[in-house]
Length: 122
Image (cartoon, rainbow, N blue to C red; front, side, top):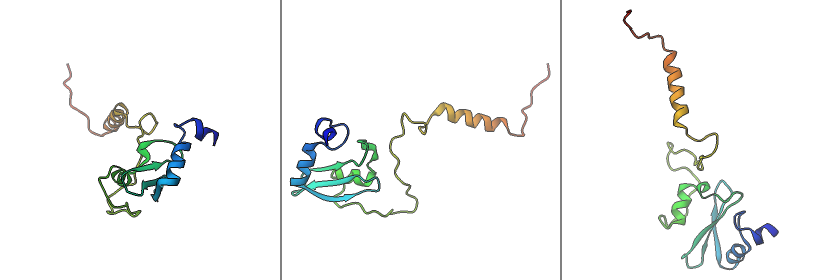
């Protein structure tokens, strides 16, 4: 509670808690545990993050709802079998895409081929 009063970057502040209690209507939650609210007139929409305040943790369906791109609440089920689960931004982590490492992996695979290039003997 002390952290909630004095630091906004650790999650929900006391002001957001009071605003959500008096004016908010809980719309739903996602698999990350984030809770999505709107006011009674549906002129404001917001998210209360479960752990880390990181906007990339919001999946695209809920992001569309937050930005008024979609007026209907997202369903929990996948709509198509080709859709994959949402991943947050991995920049700065070990799982981030690194073009230099991907080139090295391709080169090591190419070196292991059985094909030998012809070279003239001078």
